[in-house]
Length: 368
Image 1 (cartoon, helix red, strand yellow):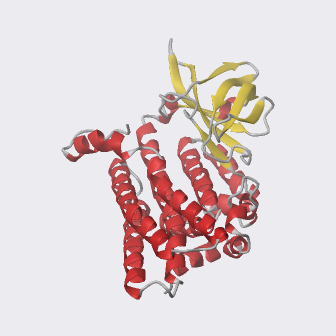
Image 2: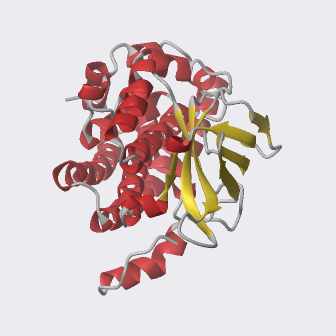
Image 3: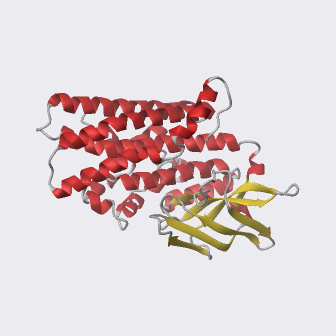
């Protein structure tokens, strides 16, 4: 089986026509802010990839989704990263909602309508974690009103639904508690603007929405840690796959270059496929056992292992490709930058050293 053939076959099975459509567009056009990639992803049914077939989704397993993300990353890294955030948001959404009727309506609505979900929790605060949002909400006779800002990592201008962390007055006494708001993007008072720092800010100005779309953490019966473990495990898995795809695009170019000695081509292939095998092991664990605290720790071991592999594979691939024309050189430089950005996603290894060391001697596992 040829390099990336299995991953692209998975895309062909679950999202027919997407790989061919992406392949027909030049890389740098796909990576442009006005890229047609999101539209092509929608047209193929991509937003419903993880939704069960009973909800009109594609019913992808974790292993399927990993392979899809690697294939997308090999064609357009920015789309792979953006859709990872959508899939992570979908997994979070499905876990948060306990009302089966509401869950069916929202998840089926996303899948059948090819809608995109953006995740905005604490990006507006440099010191904020996902459990310390700055947005606030109040409940009144007309519904829930929310105000504040957030900076979703992606999909701000393409989103149909925003998952936002908010602080609300406690229902059982004084003080505040964390809640999750599910805000339709077309709601009056929702606006998107540039921040001047290569990112986009979503502002919610006294946005009114139904109270059933506000999920209090106190309503989760102590399941918040389980839900966060599940969501973050999916995030690490799919983000790792996306960046393996960007690196894979470089490796593929080396494999197709007859100027490169066979020994060097095989060396790159072995390391790239070894890293993917580690990620596939994590995906199978999620599929077999479901994500829990132990799986979340495993997802970080794998993600950091892959980072190390990419730190060797990417510069070697760039070096082996040698002298290129300006267009090819720009593409190689862009792919290299994208592949190396796996290290920039949370949580950073330096911040997790202490928590992982404590967990290895039977301490509690925490995300720094």
